[in-house]
Image (cartoon, rainbow, N blue to C red; front, side, top):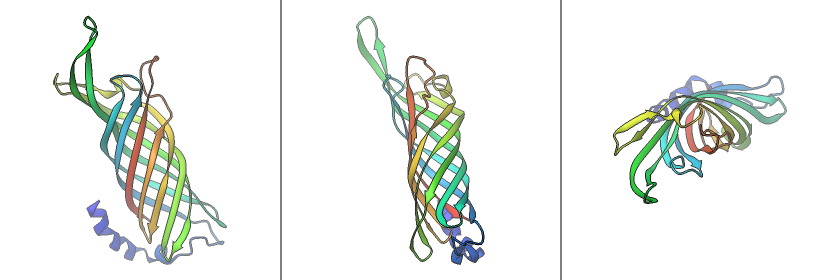
Amino acid sequence: MMAIAIAMPTFAQFDGSRKTRNRFNHSNVEQYYGVRLGLNVASINSSTVGLDMNSYAGLALGGVYGLQLANSTPLWLEIGAFYSEMGGKDNNYLFDKDKKEIRASQKKTTRLMYLKAPIVFKYEFDVADDFYVQPFLGGYFALGIGGKTKLYEDKHSYDSFDDYNRFDGGLRFGCGAEYQMVYAEIGFDFGIANICDDDFASARNQNFFINVGVNF
């Protein structure tokens, strides 16, 4: 993030046309490309003990492409491709069936790594010179590519997708802001797909994210 912040003035000088361009030129439809680096604060929501997990911080890295849907309106379609780390952490409780009580607990962390493809609609407000606010709404699809679950007391680890399905999908909403070429956004991913690998249980991803980057 620090490297991007240092490089941003250089990018702005490199492409002055975007800095001063007429964003809604009737002669052609605008478009842009962008790179993003961000932080995920994810959790897994489930009614099943052992699957419900608290917040876990991870990395998000990717790129986006934006297209103005009509040359007379500030409505944009943005699609992206991200490497995204999600998951959760909690205490894993061990239940004694004979005594019918919890006999022990141990720290448990689950890391889920996805290739994520968000698709959102943005409506752009021209707030000031070269400064725009862009609320957005849409969805995402994701495919699990790796992950590890660790049980610290047992000193045991295994593939996280032994417990969860690899496919995920849901809603995405939030708000971004752009100044010249510099872009930042906050948002929330609300998982709709059941990622639990058990037919008799359910679990869904939830994720608060902050991304920064540049648009070209």
